[in-house]
Length: 227
Image (cartoon, rainbow, N blue to C red; front, side, top):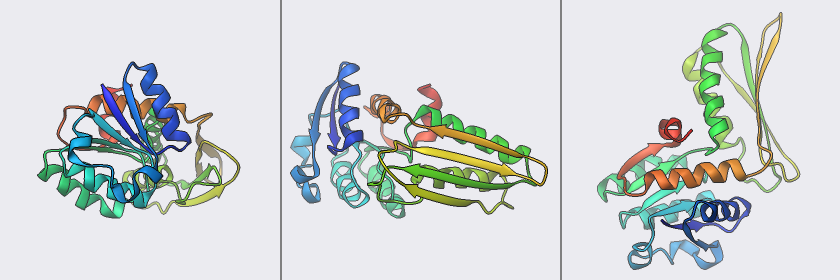
């Protein structure tokens, strides 16, 4: 397959490396080469099996509008744009495109989301909180993953009001900790990314999955098919 990776950041570069390891061809476009999605024309995109976006929230929206309008298949790991999700879904469905989005493409984090739901169901009277730590250059806070964890916990137990504490420091790839506390004890559920490879591996496998498919999916809906 031939993939287009949008974003020359650390995650985008790692995705390109992993895609090569999987035997795929890769073209990488940095934001300086694609301002306001100007490079994403129909003839250019026609040569790619899927587009993988790990840019910024603002750039991702422009990129999605351009790509989905041509019927392209996209994997979007950028967060901070979900207020536009309904619009992006509408374009994808109208143009028979494919959109696979998610707050975290790590298979381990997907397992944490499933486990978090079970924990909230098992401990209905505990107080839950989330702490998350990422590198100092990450723009959005709380992280999309922390918001997904909060949504899962509160969905399993609507009585919960889960607080999120965010830290931005160093070059941390990502740490998420759920704490369930009572007067008698405390349980922690923790996921720490040692590098960006886990996210990149999930994104490449997601691109392999979405290529040739039409529709809209959140990554958690299909992650079990990849694990």
